[in-house]
Image 1 (cartoon, rainbow, N blue to C red):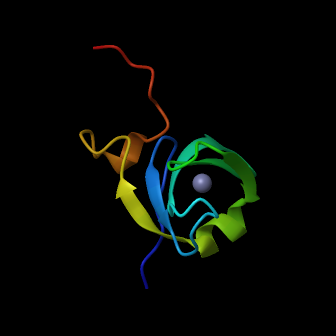
Image 2: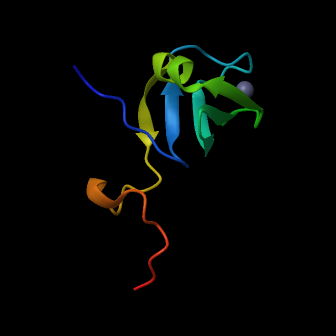
Image 3: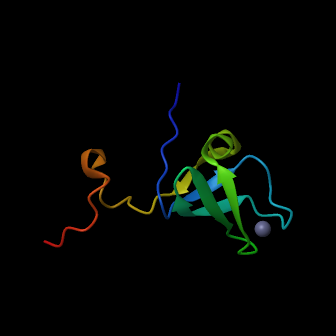
Amino acid sequence: MERKVFQLGDIVLMKKNHPCGSNEMEIIRMGMDIRIKCVGCKHSVLVPRAKFEKNMRKVIRSAAESSADPSDADAGTENS
Ligand SMILES: [Zn+2]
């Protein structure tokens, strides 16, 4: 079973196409609900996390693919 991992700024592939024809979305806000922005038409929608996880297929491009350290995903503000 594959667990879905995603984070703020990721570009994800959705199972269903947006009406504009694109099925790529960018995660622009995370919380109880997730706000995603259509890459095709720049329209943003707020969806419950459970629904988002069900509807997303995979992460196409991770915002943090250069620093792949899962242990400190929440730090972010260190400046070394
Ligand atoms: Zn769209």
